[in-house]
Image (cartoon, rainbow, N blue to C red; front, side, top):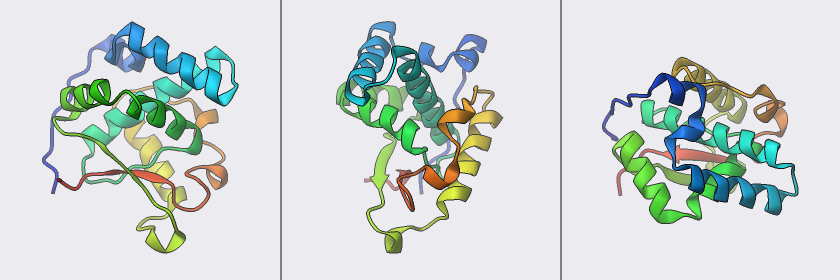
Length: 156
């Protein structure tokens, strides 16, 4: 079982999750997302901010198995590519590594993806972080159709 942690965020971080990582890294991540997904930079900024908010929610709710939407998962994947920075972020915000645990088949799913997305949005709101609804809805198209990815709180 993962241990609980207390994440202390400043008012600025609550309003702008992007302040949780260095500005230069945030720029690299949003540029990568914009380029690889062929989306405007402004949209990539929202994707990355929501991915950071999602990860804070995972840190605050270590046993909840929260799931990102398909769009937010793009930001998580981009951050994972920067392994050292991602590990440092996880240690800072959660006191542990936040594992990415994709579910490859419906039979492997241990949760209802629609409910998981709803619980994730509620956890982000409960943390006082902003939610961009367009990146989380429609739930029927989120989380890679039927199962998606989740925070895996299991210890190594």
